[in-house]
Image 1 (cartoon, rainbow, N blue to C red):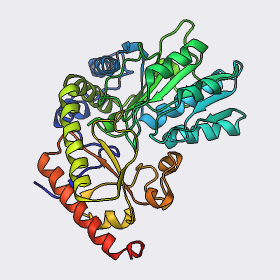
Image 2 (image 1 turned 60 degrees about the vertical axis):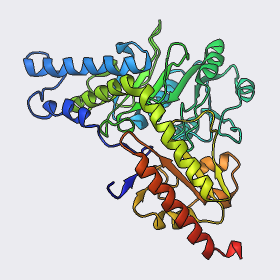
Image 3 (image 1 turned 180 degrees about the vertical axis):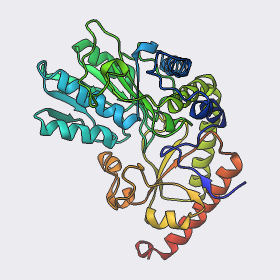
Image 4 (image 1 turned 180 degrees about the horizontal axis):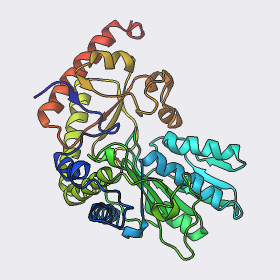
Length: 388
């Protein structure tokens, strides 16, 4: 066992060696621009891009022509929300989302509010899941888009996508989901779930950073999206710019591996996660699980340790890579906005850690982390004035 141990797979994942192997030729030997249609270098690059498009589509049960390549899920979220809202302004100005969404969705909604759109932030239940009755009540004749994260990056809860998609479909409202954490970890079927737009990021599924995709359902007439980037009309005019061929190849290969290995990998990670949870709970009192355990990603665990400050705990666990929440907000000292939305008291929100297991973690590492967490929490509690 090598130290430090990496338990922060929601922030990013290591590139799988098989993904790297697939990418390498497209840096040096097959370096052509996929838009160059007059020679073999361009043809090879374009063929690789189309192969990747098929691989991404197969993972989520979509059609290849419904996949647009982007720089990652943040860009995909921005394109989905801003692009759809601005293109459908004449139909309505109302968007529904959750206060627990990723900042890429929340900040896009805040930007749209400045442009005159109205956004409803639906409260979630204590377990982090959406209340479908509240969603039904939130629809108005002006509602054009609902955006709900498939699986949460901080608390790991998996939303009822099929039920949400059905409610949206019945009302002719578009449904977007940020699936950066879900894609490759749990089954996604965009057709049966009635998903219209879906965001993916390669680096959350053992692919490279800086590349992602946006699924856009094929419709007649086509689903209108106002582009964020102009210049060349790449990706069906929705996302201009020279395609990142090595990255796209890596994303495609990562999706292919996930599709083939997801059932076995999910079962193994769920076993490791439960071993971690049971080990910690058997050694420590006053530890609380944040978010639903029944509807949860197989590799996620979010715990609050009463009478312990999570920043001090991270320092004590300096040989383990963990986080207090989203990597996008981890530099801030406030308690997690996600946990606060769940109704977690500040003292427990300040005492939370996110454990994200991954493809290459082992039972030996889990047992080491259990020992270290139990030791560190016990030591910190012995120093805590709250227990005097």
